[in-house]
Length: 392
Image (cartoon, rainbow, N blue to C red):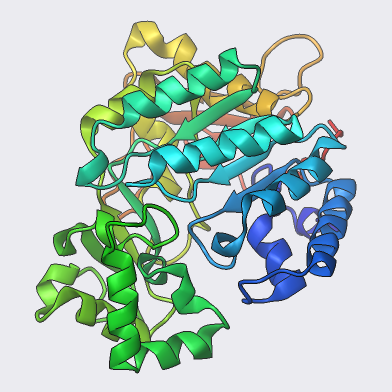
């Protein structure tokens, strides 16, 4: 964190202690965690919070986090509780196991007595289109029951992630070489497919069942001829084509077009849900959310009369949840982080094929009173800071 701040970031950064990172440090890619391993994870989490991390996060559809059980998550959440920090989670399932996965997250927060942030709400896959009503009802019920829960969403109908997440998590147990060995074995491929397609499971089986081959747009692959194509266009059996892609490049990524406009609209309208990009570093092939989530929200989904509520969703609703003191509001004593935009021209024309397009309508930006965007142009001032727990 010291090194990042010394480098002079161009925007403010706050970090969470990631469950996957903690688990990798304590147990590598092993599915089982020993009591000593869990104690080590809790020790590392405490060190992270002491150093300034603003919360605990998990990504339970990804390995090795997918191997964790409820007691492991509660143990780590209790560490975060000592610093009054929140738990932010990518649910264990955002498709057919969505209800159970949301119940799990709420149970973690309830047992540890901490704030809960459900990251990038979605109802992914045709089987759960319309499930936004269930998600919003569970969030509201949890708040009425005393759980301080909020959530966020990005204004797109596709998500982006690594292709290996389509496989059941067991495929990655033991690390990359073990994965490649499984993909080279026809019997192992068949076993993984049976697990992915089994109607007896709702969580912990990867993304395969929520996808149609035409939904999968390949974003990055070490074969440039593959990039930009759909899984359905590659010919042959889609499962075998996916396994072949991953065998050639286990780090490949994709964009997955699996959501419905009605669910997105419901999430965007709910007062408990703020806006988050879920974006990655703005380099190379990417999802347009990395470059335009907030301008797209303001320019496409917000009417003029709803602008004050929209701005709350972009500012104080987020800052309060993560304890960012002095930020997310305007008034005497607040830190002067300001964005001046034109509500008539704000927007983003980026596409999945060309995401890195400059947003329109962003006129001026100030960080702690120092101007970093002037008349739509970057001033060159790298005035971002690492926002650490408990510091202004």
